[in-house]
Length: 353
Image (cartoon, rainbow, N blue to C red; front, side, top):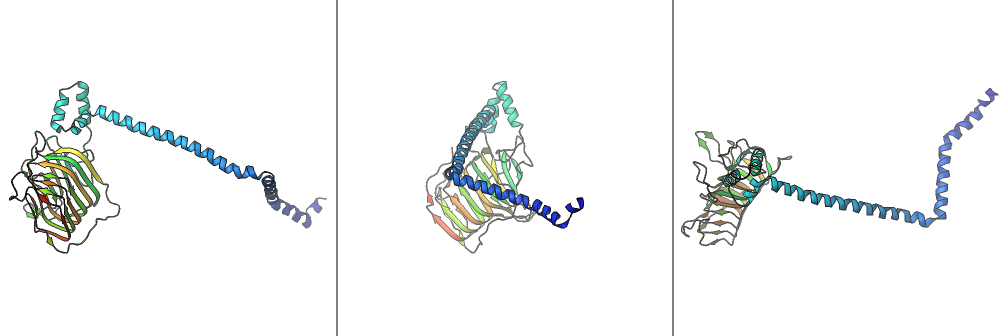
């Protein structure tokens, strides 16, 4: 009998049954599903819609709770920042750094401790701390309690965006002065060549540069090449705009995976300096925005800049010297390909209070 079971016909039949069994079962399941659809087509059609509506209701409930918690978290975070940072609060109210520390130092032990804790935080460009910064580093290479200049040195690393806004400079706030040996409140651009110490001339290369809402005793532009020069809406106590037509090329700063953007807002400094400080190496910024700089005590200087677009917009310049003294000056060393010169007027402007 055992030999008969192993005959070829029986073996083939058994093998076929084993191979076909999954397919037969799948056809049976499909047939049952078809029977169900035929018996109750309405339920099958409505079930996905009902499921979607229930899922959507649950989703909306969860997202509403998440939005509420995020809003509350932001409010509490801001509250604790204000409570623990009286020093920053006084700066926002217009006090100089020295006055803020002095006022809080004679206050309560808690306030003095808060100042000490805040003062011990590492200084950074983003926080608006004075110091010498090697772009794109956010931490200064030099800082000191007696050093109150915001200085950004640019080298071979291109920066996508540098934005500095809402700062007070020079002698425009109480108990302030220009740095020792310095006569300018703002310096932006390259550096002239020198022999002792040896230094090869540098320029600041910018894709798009915006200078807007400055208040300066005087504003001078020299040694600049701009494909598009836009000078619009400036008021000055005497002006001379003598830019010369030429063929500066358009430009933008690429560099692939560029360094992080450098942004800071608010602060009181003796001076702002943004320069290409490495001999023979032009600093490069794709977008440079310098907005709402309130200065006193020295000129604002833009020198040795090569820009795709340079905008000089709605600035106020003057020290009350009369129209004969050209306190807003664009010299003949400024070369442009395209020039917009609109709504620039001479008016009596006294020095800032």
